[in-house]
Image (cartoon, rainbow, N blue to C red; front, side, top):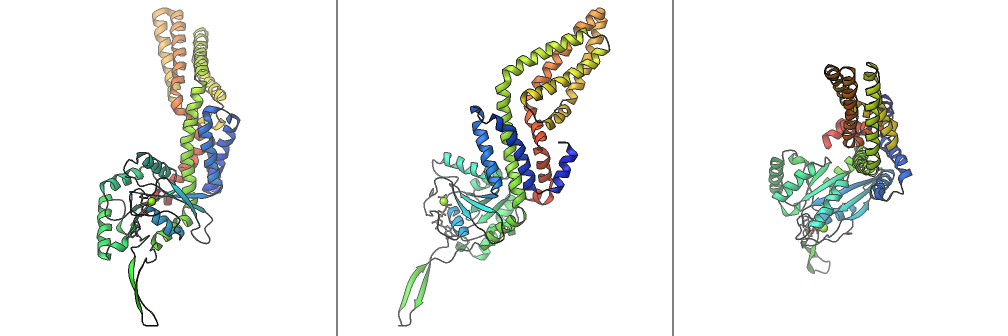
Length: 411
Ligand SMILES: Nc1nc2c(ncn2[C@@H]2O[C@H](COP(=O)(O)OP(=O)(O)OP(=O)(O)O)[C@@H](O)[C@H]2O)c(=O)[nH]1
Ligand SMILES: [Mg+2]
């Protein structure tokens, strides 16, 4: 699809509709290859991603070190003690998700994913799982329970590289006075440099039980331990605000970014699958071009060479079943190498004529023409996924989403 058509399309539709159209193009493209065993993992992931987008399922990962109250935060958000909470490190051993209805008028299904603590003893594999969840999530809640430790600081720096919206949740605020909380927030803000003290959300997901004295009508006085209600409103309203204003763009953006990664993997495999044939075909094309340019009359050979290079790009596209839109991008990317090929040919022919007249011209011209086509083939694999991204409209929609001001401020 031409660029102008894409921009018309982008201005008319919502981010999710755009993302769904791109997914549909990719899906239609890969469906004929659904039975290829080597593509199964990526095609399964593509199918799951498409289902999630269609279901409007927004994922929130709850992330942090052990014992910070991550599971308690999830319980407080859903309003029920659904996940196990406990004083020992490593209570949560694997990611667990709960569906959450955050309030009326929000058309999104929200999945809260609790993750194992990052620094659990001998928990490297579980930490890995937690990172995978964070990478797949649309929003990350990073739970802390006091001033930042070195590990938390490093994890936050790493999370920032995912370019996802992140809410910093300071839990267990019942253990601190208002002045202490303010001091902690200011200290964290100073250390991080990219979050203001007001942006750090203070909550108490599972406050410490307190002694409650009850005076009964018969004059008895009893003393009981009672757990105060969780204080989670600040976090809840912030999430609802994000869901109201940005969920659609975030869902589309995250889905498309993951699609882009899948596409790269799929095209790498596709290239490997065809590598032997492509190699043989590339060599035959290079030889054919060399002979044709060598035999063509002077002048005509200079026109023939770029024409044959372009035909080679077209042939490659047809062999790999590239979408038509990607050929335009391919020719754009290969513009410089094509120009360089032309200049090298001109030089070689000049040198050949000087050294050996018309025979020298044909011989040297033919060799350089063949070698330059061969070189084009070696430039192609790393560029393939970019060409296809453009062909499916993925690149244009991603640029549009990342360029949108409100989102750029968040991610
Ligand atoms: N005082 C206080 N304690 C809390 C609060 N939230 C959680 N806790 C306590 O902190 C401990 C750890 O809570 P969890 O929710 O299990 O912590 P977690 O981060 O999920 O821990 P792992 O699953 O081990 O990584 C429990 O004993 C909770 O009762 C809170 O707001 N205030
Ligand atoms: Mg837990």
